[in-house]
Length: 179
Image (cartoon, rainbow, N blue to C red):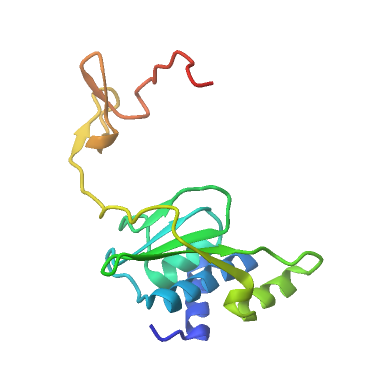
């Protein structure tokens, strides 16, 4: 992928809806991963991203690299960290890109410009993935909940008193172990 910074930044901003430092973090993480792994836009599941946050930067990953929850190649493991693991399915290569953090005592605009323009190695740490490459997305049969009548994916149905119930209708049973 030829990194066309202005074009890709514009695409990320249009997708996200506004300019902010958080979007810039995800944007530069895409740049780092694209350069380290020679990534292209993922039209299916060629590229996988495991994000450790649900913040603004994730929108850049969707817009620039084509990782989306709907395709099954954007996986949320919300740990509250500005960290993203990227994989290439064809080579099984992966890298974890971790944001080092904002510079204290800088304005929002100063942090934005710093993130957008600093050398990648200055703003990110590169680590081995903590996770393995996830399996390809599966398509599950839908079953009708016998309480509300709505259909739910087979792997999310629970059985109670012989009835198929969706997660909203199923009352989980716990005796309090593990507290």
